[in-house]
Image 1 (cartoon, protein in one colour):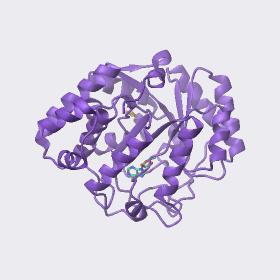
Image 2 (cartoon, helix red, strand yellow):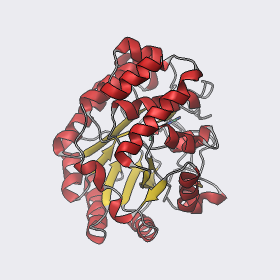
Image 3 (tube, helix red, strand yellow):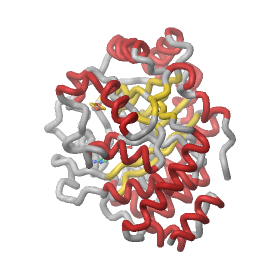
Image 4 (spheres, helix red, strand yellow):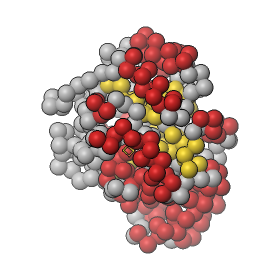
Length: 352
Ligand code: 5AD
Ligand code: FES
């Protein structure tokens, strides 16, 4: 098994059958795997960890994904939308804390028309010309993506969730398709966005073969960012009684991603911090190099409930920046703010 890890380190790739062996190996390989993924990460990024300030702008969503707590079919959830002024306040607070990337994430909410979104994007862009604007608003038409880009957005996060059509069908209702989601990702690339994609680890019905297909899809797309986290149940969804994904497999996959995509930005996600108290620290040690503290107004945070027991939604929530800074240091790394924040991945070539 060590040979496989060496090969992955040296060649940035493995055969399907080798990936399967590694993904299904017992835990005894992890120490060695993480030592090489961390080595690779340090060769490229040193001990730097990048901050992306997350602003959850709306929990309205017209979609009905079986796993997601903000699905439109969840009638128990109280819904909210931030106003443009709320969003600008979040940016101001974030800017003063040293954030230079703002990620506006939300459900697919028609209230945020393209015109309104562009108005918000241009305002942020004008006020903070030194900041990167990232969007995570789901599947849109090419024209919408282009309009957001013209207004000043340069990055877009859209997880493929699963690259396998059959698996995709088991997680979504018939109005959605894996094919369309992939098309959106390639459209975003074509426009010139830096693109983030990713999957939930251990989503219902996921097989090792599905994960391998996801990795192959990512190799085709060549995303700048790859975000993964364990699937976590939400009581008010059709998947309420499914099993959670595992911390171990998520960490192993982070390490494999670091070795397959040496230059990728890989966040240590909130879902990882939710499944285990030290999950995000472990994610960093396995090869992740981004954290995404929550900048949303604390009064709304509980309502952006993608899954159960989501962290950073209670009393402690105002202090995500300090909390994460401590966590990153505990893991042996350092947060980079302001100037160094976003630039590196923009200039590094991608490794094939
Ligand atoms: N568990 C884990 N992750 C989830 N997401 C949505 N619902 C869940 C869940 N129940 C993830 C999806 C989505 C991202 C914003 O959150 O991958 O793309
Ligand atoms: Fe939000 Fe720790 S990161 S409280």
